[in-house]
Image (cartoon, one colour):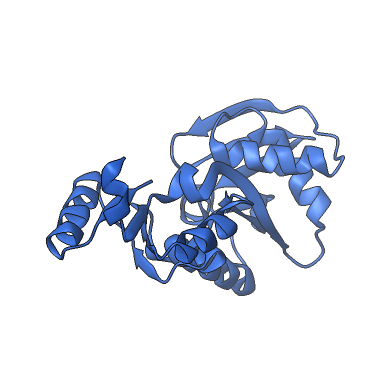
Length: 212
C-alpha cells in the first residue's frame, strides 16, 4: 500500500473490468420484407437451446421485447460456428456469416454482407439468421461497458493517473470500448504473457504501474 504513492499509470484489463463481461444484443438488421421481431422470434427459438453467450444475448433480447419463443425440433449445434433447427416447419440456421453461407447454400444480399463486415470491423460478433435458402438478417452482439467505467476512468485521470487499456481482444473491440470510457492509450491483441511483458516495459520506463 505504501508503494501506491508512486503509481502514475493504471493498466486496465477489458473484459469484466471495464465491461460487464456479459454479451448483449446491439443491433438487428433485416433484409427487405422481414421484420426485426420475426427475425428475433425464429433466431431465439433455435438459440434458446444453446448455452453460448451470443445465444443467451439473442434469447434475452427476444424475451425483453415480449416475443413468444416457439418450440424447436431437431436442434443441432456446430461448436464455434452456429446452430440450426426446425421452427414452424422451416429450417432456421443461426451462426457465423461464412459458416451459414458455405454449409447451407444460402445467399446473402450485398447490403447485409456489407453491414456484417462493418460490424465485425467495429468489434461486434455477427450472427446471420437464415431460412428458405436465404440470409434474412443479421444480429450483432457485443460485450457492454459498465455504467460506472467512464466515471472511474475520469476519477483516475483526476488523480493524475494515465489509464492504459490492455486486452487480448481485437483492435476494433478495444478501440470502441476505449473511446466510450475516455482511454486514448490502447494495446489490443495482447496475450497474457504479453500483458506481463507490457507492464514490465512500462516499469523499465520508470513508471509506477497499477493493474486492474
